Image (cartoon, rainbow, N blue to C red; front, side, top):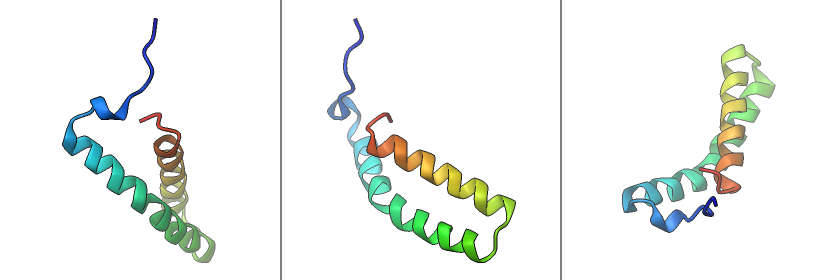
Length: 63
């Protein structure tokens, strides 16, 4: 039987890092979105998709 995800079982440094990344991923993603809308390059679009995917995983408590 699979146990549920419990973030409090993580080491302290990893919980703090997750907390700070979770707080800053939205502003960075918004900045990247504006940048993609102004000057759309392949690298900027890939970075935007990666940030959106990382934000989704963090806010759904998958990682």
